[in-house]
Image (cartoon, rainbow, N blue to C red):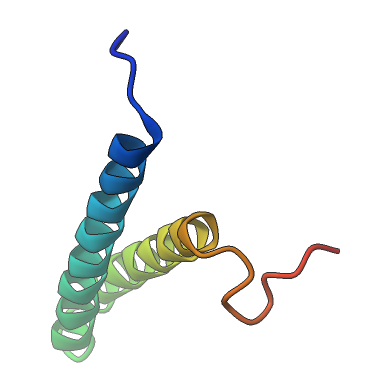
Length: 75
């Protein structure tokens, strides 16, 4: 991976990554909700993935729109 990428391309890539994370978070949230009554272990695994994608989204949001979200101030 030695390609030089300009800032516009980097921004586009981060926006695509964010869109992908949003989609994956929805998929895992739906799976978690569907599995909860029947498969508690599967639901727990799905819940962990939901939290992981939520975290990725918070990080990408802070990079793409710094300071826009509550709790994003520096300590």
